[in-house]
Length: 71
Image (tube, rainbow, N blue to C red; front, side, top):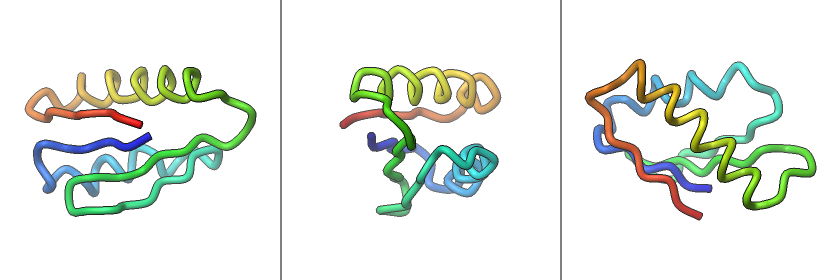
């Protein structure tokens, strides 16, 4: 799943959000975009739901940000 931020200045904060979880692999692919993968047996739908739930929680703490999640 790819996550694109409206504000690249928030990228460090977003990366820190995933850093605590050893079951997540995050690769920065642009100044404003990362690719997120969950380790384990989650299918594509489950991975999408997981990233969307995490992004909703993250957005509640960063209401000035806009996030686009896509495959």
